[in-house]
Amino acid sequence: MKTKPAADRSIRSFWRSLFFFATAVCLSFSLIACGSNGQSNEGNGGDEATVAENTNQDQGGNEEPSNSDKEDDSENSEKGTKKRRERTISVNAARAVQSDLVVPIIAEGTIRARHSAEIRTELEGRLIQIYAEDGQSVRKGQLIAKLDSREYEVAAEEARAKYLEALSLLAVEEDSLPALEIPDELQEKFEELRRLEKKGLITREERLAREIALEVEALRDGIYRVEIAASRSGVSAARTALERARLTLERTEIRAPFSGVVTGLVLSQGEQVTKGQQICTLVNNVDIEAEVGVLEADMSELTVGRPAFLIFPAVGETLQAEVDVVSPQFDRDTRTCQVLLRFRSENGSVRPGMFVRAVIAGRTYKDRLLVPKEAILTREGRPLLFKVEDDRTKWLYLQLGERNDYLVEVKRVLQGGTLAPGDLVIVTDHLTLAHDAKVKVKKVVGISDPWSSVQEDT
Image 1 (tube, rainbow, N blue to C red):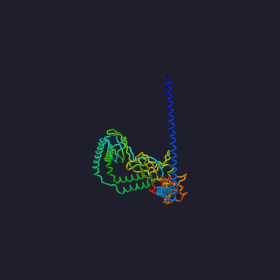
Image 2: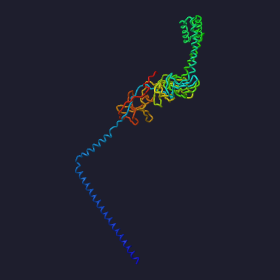
Image 3: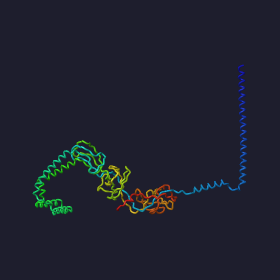
Image 4: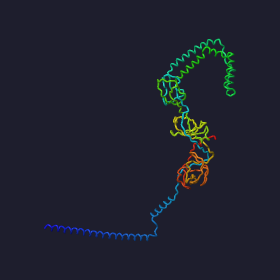
């Protein structure tokens, strides 16, 4: 009884599955049949459209093309013309020149002050006042510091009193002496002896001996009676002592021996100083000089007065100067000769101790054909340049000569044509240029050779 319902359920499940399978198969065949009909209709329609198109072409074969066809042909023609149009390259050019070529001498060194001094005391005493500060600019004769001068003022007053005392004694004795002056004849003899010494006709010892003989003879004639009386009365000694006391008093004031900048000031007001103790250092930072070392191989063309340019990389300045001093000897270690170039640093930007590069005018090559160094290219190991002729480039292969940082000498043209002074040579945008290319010169630039403005005596 329990197995019969289960068997019924299995039979019903089998028929249900079979029904679903049959339905799916029917649907599939229906879809395939519909797709075949659609493709057939499309094929027939395409054939009909093709036949209609061919028929229209056959019927209109003898007709003229439409306006749209003419416009398309015109556009294609213009594009072809643009493709065939030659490209023009814009460049800058310079003119070849016939001039002198200066090959410079390069030397490096440092800046130093022409005037630098350690300011020291000449007396001992207490520093009562300092009038300058470290880094301050002072003028020649300006007061820097002062020592206590009271003791030296007293000594000067004592010397003055003794001088006045001796002077009064001389005044009493002088009343009995006639006033005699040294005759002009004796003065002329003294001058003649000095001229003979300057010419080298007599020695200094001979001049002194003759002067003494003349003075003894004048003494016998009574010419030096007043001087003798002054010596006897002590006036001469008193005057000397007074001048010495005044000089000592002046030394209590420490003044600048020249204009410059105070540096290294380490003492303070109230300190006790000894004789010879350093107060500060004074440096003239306006009148300065460049000390450079020139190699012995470059010395053949170096003389005093040669023009030069001094380059200071630290401040980005270049000054013009000339050679002032050439040392007579060489440094054994560096094999260089010391050369000094003096100048003024008005704004104080160039200071002692800075690095300097000197570019000194060396050998000069007269009357050479020159072009800017920017015009020279190298292709396949051969130097060349591009010359502008009738708005076209002409390459010229060259044999080069001497050069400096701005110009190159053209000794001769090896291939491509000729080059003469005044010809335009390309200096920009020429790395990829070809021969006979069309160019337009935007600007004719000048040659920036600083030596062209330097006049030299050779």
